[in-house]
Image (tube, rainbow, N blue to C red; front, side):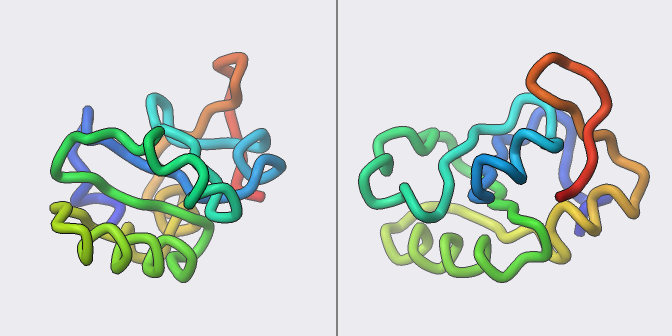
Length: 101
């Protein structure tokens, strides 16, 4: 759940570029699902890793893929919708307030 993600957790955002631009979790790493195979090296080696998308479906697929590779990984249930509903902040690339797109 969004309220269970500790501050400073390593977060992998797998949403597409336009979604990321609208808003994301500060400090998260962006590797869109559509680019994942080519950019697998960009996934932080840190475990545990929390994977997020808008509602949790895409991130669930990535979580299963990473777990199959032996990674300690969790899917953020409800995605960024749940994050925002829990009152947790989103930012834009310039540091301003973000939204879920």
